[in-house]
Image (cartoon, rainbow, N blue to C red):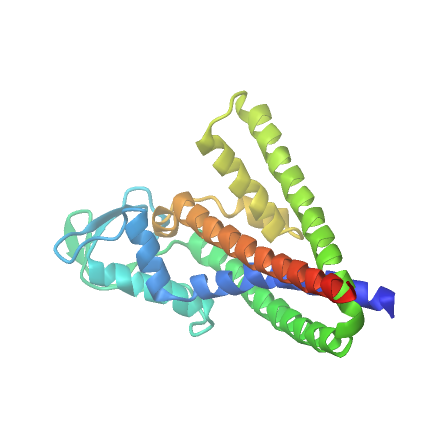
Length: 267
């Protein structure tokens, strides 16, 4: 039973980590207000009296559009609705678009590469939803077991949750070190921008491990890449990292106080 208690603590900690990543990612990807706040932070959200100039409309190098705030909101709504499963196709056409200085209707906003890439992203999102649902069930089962075994499991919570987090942290440090040396190898120098580019490159390989072509197909010039910039995604990563640190810290500290209280009772 002691082995099962230890495994339960490890499983719970790992599942807590995964949920602290996937749940915010799902919420961010399907919430309009999040896109608006991040667009503002990245200086790509126009005021009501202004327009945002965006290149590569429809994936074409010669097409530039001036989007109003309402049109940007429509694009945001389309992205979030697609990722939430409310729309089957990522293709989007808008009317009254100022394209290359002239008003046009029925303008194709995203190119074929963007539409194809977002189909892959949606599949990833759907998989993440399923995995998250399964993990939530596992967390509930772990909590039930820990409550049932609370007298015996108290002695393992702090030690094995800490060991699990340390193991994860070591893995993250090794990954960052790999990205750092990869950056030096490719660019023969180090800069924050080069490091972020390589970090995003390696993260794509993690997102699409079974099909490397999905990675190569994720780099293209389009309306999508003009508004969902690397800065946008790095902000998302920062939010998730802060969330992970806060949740795991809270769990470890809870384990610490539970363990200290247990030891005090023995005295």
